[in-house]
Image (cartoon, rainbow, N blue to C red; front, side, top):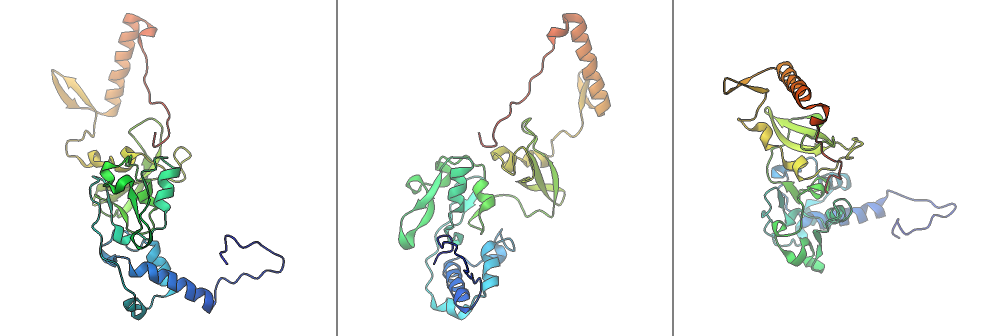
Length: 266
């Protein structure tokens, strides 16, 4: 009896453990593990993988796994510049399909083929780069295993809470840092602005932070050359220029331009 279909009745006793329940759980997990590429130590999801967590909980018998036949390895889809899809680690949970349908509302992926050949794919089974994927990475962050991983960026050693700087909406993010460089970005789920969601720029557009030519201080042109200045000097110069323009052309000569609010994946 599936728990999601069983009507609640007075006096009902629900058992969440026991030999019968545990054997059913173990068999379901074994069927997932036997067809799963087992390079856990080299996987980007190692120690953060839900399949690992469930397998440890139910207890997997290696001798039983040897008697189960495994499928042939499928080549990974590395066509996308930001995301790599490894079909051999996919457990067909469908979380990525629902995510693409309900959050960015793109429907770039779905279940393809049938039976033993079932896999998550794009329309006409084309590479992800040739699909209508908007590269938001929402499917990637929700994948419980290592089937979807960022193509670049090492595991961060620690995180820094900050705000997305590409637009004026103020999306909350966490920058993952390793060896003094930003290696990964994830959305802040507690942020009232984006609730953890990000667009392609917010999730993947961080390489400029580590660029050696990136400006770290304001520059003021003196005698035809840019020279480093403090923030106070730069702000005072801007204020002086505003006053000069206002005095010369009137208060209506000044205006401002800002980013308009939008959804993360608009």
